[in-house]
Figure 1 (spheres, one colour):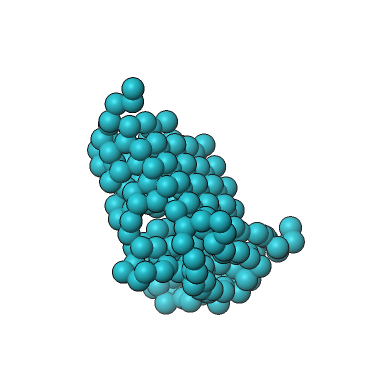
Figure 2 (cartoon, rainbow, N blue to C red; figure 1 turned 90 degrees about the vertical axis):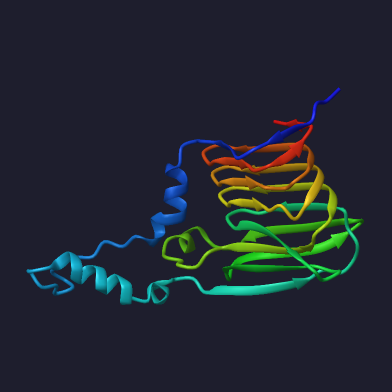
Length: 212
């Protein structure tokens, strides 16, 4: 028999250097005091002001695209398979939900409801050389769904974070990310499987009979 376990603010700490690289590394630019003609008396203060007033989005080498997908059809299973985007669940009072995607234009998403399952996938159509450059936006998939209990949830990601709030309950949830962080605040998940290689796993006040 499985025992019911409630997890309170459990965090599994792992190495964060990969996360720091993917999330912050592309946003750091080295400025030369000489090239910026900064005054000698207070270069740190002047550099700070330049950084505050500078519009870094103009340096992006990839265009940001926002897409919205209205959901049509009933489903109790959710399957999300993505590459780099963060996945965020949010509740909606609407009877049907929607998916909002923000990403570089060649990071393509597919959203469909089929045989009682919501399927969200991500495909990277960029050439290898198109990964060399700057993108100062964030790749995010926001899933607006009715707050209810669902049967199965599967989310797999390479580098994205996964955030599951307290508005949703699942019979079974499988959350996997290679380098991203995972936060589960769902009040009830009968069977919870959360794993990451170098990210953190946080479980907040989740009532579960099995966690691994």
